[in-house]
Image (tube, rainbow, N blue to C red):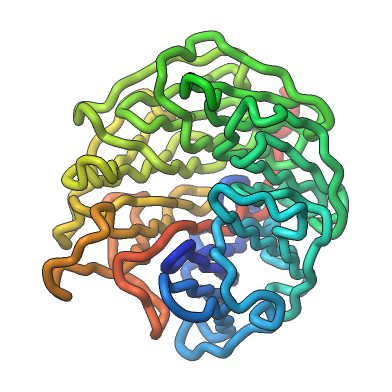
Length: 382
């Protein structure tokens, strides 16, 4: 068993880890905890953006070849195939359209990287199928969706809202056939959900059970896509148990809690949400569900983490191994002791968490994290 990790940050630190094991699946992978292969990127507020790679469970690190492309890249999103061989990095420049070239890819576990010249005007979120063949990238700037059938090496646009929607997150089923994209209408911040049943070739706008004026910020799904959960910028969660056809709203017990990210196990039973509200920086928490997203409880942490926005979470297929990353919501640090590690990991289904930063770990500055999906084995037909 092995683990492949990829970490990157916008103005700080972000990470993606890949975990592999027997018959492991979808949004995460097996219960392996060896962590042999890891890839980490740093993009501090002031300074160069470096990418670091480890092949010995994070004991030692070396600069990866991705540094040769962009040394000041604000990395925003990461994704990788089930075995960790195909890895994608995307970056996002707020308020700016660069005309493409916002994705780099690796086909050898993050050892070497190549740039894609026509992926997306701004890569705000990326997801990939288990075999690494199908990938989808969304842009928040102009509401575009592009799909790749060649492991991120070439892309074609399949949806363009012409600046009507701001797209925030994307999730794929294990084979990439079913896809869900969430975001909001730019004019009134109304939440929107787009779904595809044909590998991202065409998308349908869904509205059942989705209303209000709070943008959707994240989405996760089980391997089969039967169970899906979307997060919003307030305390509302939208849940689907019918492959994204209809959605029902649920509210957390903490009013005003901004929800930023979500991770879902391959069965959908285990789910973890990262919260945080930059306007009210005392509402940053992790939440966990063990009943397919029907109910949620806050996760107590040893650190005083309430002032941190948990910008991204991820988990193994079984849900046993999880990772989360944070940044300081308020952006103001009274003293260095206020800062906590950016990367946390859990090996007990999100019940308890332990800090784990690379050697150069930037405290309180993380934005994206992903764990490898693992190999999904569909259940036998009845």
